[in-house]
Length: 225
Image 1 (spheres, rainbow, N blue to C red):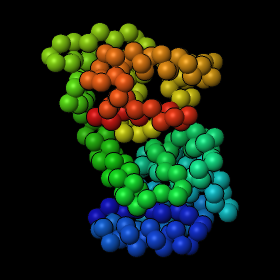
Image 2: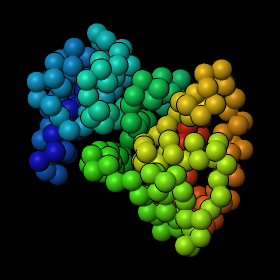
Image 3: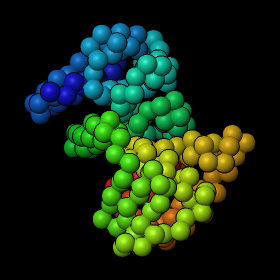
Image 4: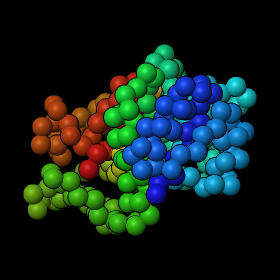
């Protein structure tokens, strides 16, 4: 049974999530403060955390930092629609995904399944990622499409490798820029638009309607196999 830690200071939300998740076979833990969340995570070892950023005692980003000090468990952030800057901060701190309030239960369940599946896949350390359109070999650093190797520039490969190694996880623009170009380029978001367009032309069946290299407007990018 998958164990989910729900962290939110609104009793109605925690109650609703506990009922709906338990009805679908999840074991649910709940916490209303950041400190309680960190304590429960340490003692009960959940498989995934659903975390509201607006907590009464600790900032949600502080909770993420506390968790990332010792665990790689998936963290899905709940945030208000107007908190785009906060979402980016949470992603940079190590959150795996975010859902904007108000949200539908179907969306939350889909994000939960993806987060758990991603965690299991990462544990297997499979170096080859296969999509219906192309294959990525992370060991030899090559991409094939239709049995033919696709030539990527070092920068294109750097972007693709980061996204592929975090399959399904939203990677912020700042993180991509920092890891591919360096810390002095974190504001150069136009670089990402150019290189993602090039990658889509080389890899996507329909570059104008990408299936695998997804843009989350204002947030970052996500790779979906």
